[in-house]
Image 1 (tube, rainbow, N blue to C red):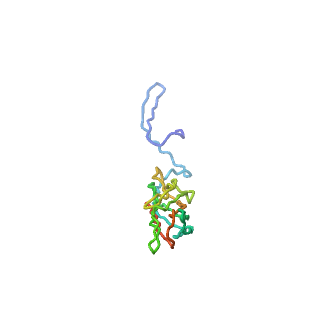
Image 2: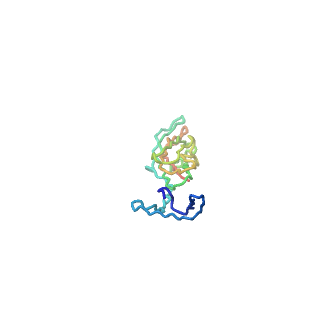
Image 3: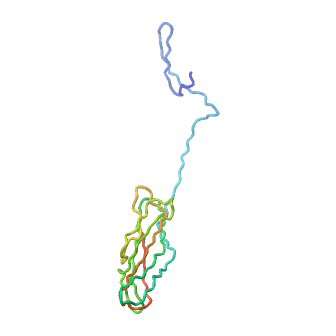
Length: 190
């Protein structure tokens, strides 16, 4: 038999000089070359465990610029401490980071409403290997809730490490009472 005849059942047809023919079944089993013993397969299994969606920050305090009592409206300015979003869930859910702020008040009862706070958000990938595109929220009033940054739900994986920060302004009304003021800015992710 030729080398290219495959292993398995074959039909052999034989014809003599007078034109008589006949058929026989032939089972071909070639001897295996010991240097090429054939193919083996092995199934590979493994698990990649999902992590969490979390936020961290560089520090908790923001110091706004100082102003004096004035007959004109003024603006105090500051910068949000950078917030890092880490998405290790291994899926495509996306996320939204929001902020809300309380009234700016003194212990003596002087108050500037929370709606006087505004921000200009910024967002970026903190790691070039991150999936998904971070989008900064719109500039405007923080008040009882505003978006700082987000990554939309994707077709593929949206995981990675992202950073978000913002320039913060506080509108101080004319003749606002003097004192040490404070407010609490709360950041939440979902």
